[in-house]
Length: 392
Ligand code: SDX
Image 1 (cartoon, rainbow, N blue to C red):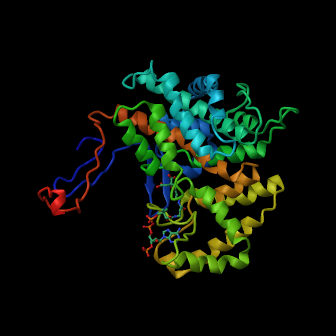
Image 2 (cartoon, helix red, strand yellow):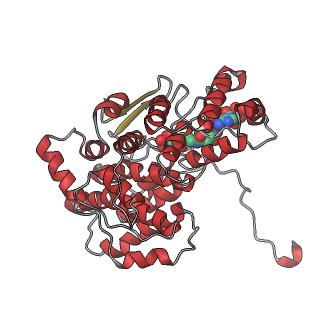
Image 3 (spheres, helix red, strand yellow):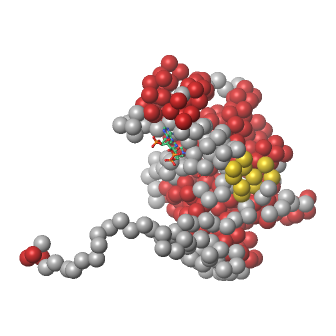
């Protein structure tokens, strides 16, 4: 038992990572961050406070939070030469490609003086990543629409600062939108961590080699991009647009059940939750509230609700315990906030950076942690002798 993976000698690996950060009960639909139920954090906390909790294991006292917030707001800037970095991309490059590359390139700016074995260096890397992700994300978006990027404003709170960098029009002062900021902060809380999901396991595996935190988080970003994982929120919106109307829901359900059709209901199902994803419940309620407060009527919400209603009554989905997951409704809210579809997974990555870096640090702090080395069940050829070309 390496403290990281437990190997079952002789029969391949039954990897079981040890972690104290997040707990999930898939049958009961329970999600706890450091023991606190996601429902309570969603109602009473803020993303930055949740980031502190994930990193430090305890909710911050007022002075601890003030110091953390000061540190984060004083590390939001990017090195000026990173601004040229985006010029190397096509204007319509997918923002996840730009995000992954930009985060990996932070290694070139901060790697030299970073000692992954020094707790202070690890903490500074966490602060830098949590602080810079919104700046990089907004820069990706502004580049894609041909607008100049905006410098982060330290006098704004975390989410307001991000929305300002995203949407501030050069020719007029941005009207801050408290409804949008509150909704986005809540979505960031809900996406902050989720135990050993594919992208977090990727960050831990890359981190276990001693790779620097920026390279490790960049690996997590690329893993998150897949449509089976964080890319699902973008895929859900595209699927809802393809279905187009509640009248087409029945045929979509039929396609999702057809084994000869690769069509899956995006935003449905989960490797762990065999009950409602507690985050999906919160986001579904938020959807109605936020769209009403913003005065947005989105016909896709009617399609989503009809799809959910039909699937939850259908034998195929009931039998397989397929419920809406965190990605099913989140895109409808992002869209109402004016965030373009291809930026949805970037939103997920901003939030999940808090969890990723907390896991990366936890692994370094776990005594006896060694390089991750998953094993396999070999299914290839038996041992055999080489055959010269003339005899093949
Ligand atoms: C996230 O791991 C995490 O914690 C991830 C995440 C996090 O916070 O980090 O929660 C975020 O990634 C959520 C998941 C987002 N992905 C999607 O919404 C994509 C659509 N969902 C599926 O592709 C699927 O449900 C997965 C990828 C999520 C899980 O895939 P599995 O493990 O193959 O699903 P399963 O084994 O539980 O499936 C059991 C059956 C299979 O059919 P049978 O072979 O038994 O006949 O259900 C079927 C699957 O084909 N199935 C679906 C389906 N999901 C599973 N059929 C139709 N539509 C679907 N969405």
